Image (cartoon, rainbow, N blue to C red; front, side, top):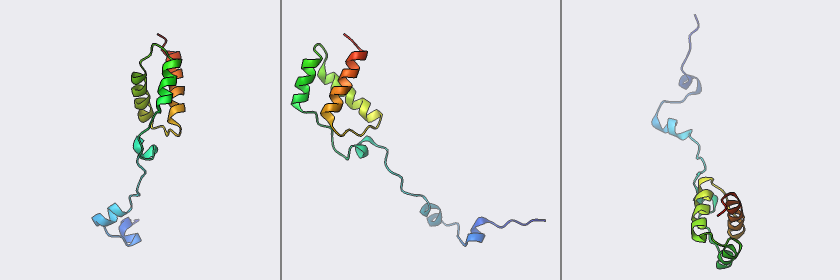
Length: 98
């Protein structure tokens, strides 16, 4: 007959709460703030003016809100907010013509 010993007895560990908790690694956060370095994405007034010029008839404030929600939902790291916003607006207006 084979006799099994508990794993704690083989490795010399005790079954205390500290032992159970100590083995859990610190995992990185999955929040959008962590991905953007804790900064709020700023779009310059020049980018707003350019968006109004390139996409007449669209509500640029609405597009900005949708862009921010999309960026946060997909946890996208944005390095150049103005360029990213303009590219997103271009794609949005192509897919949603007036």
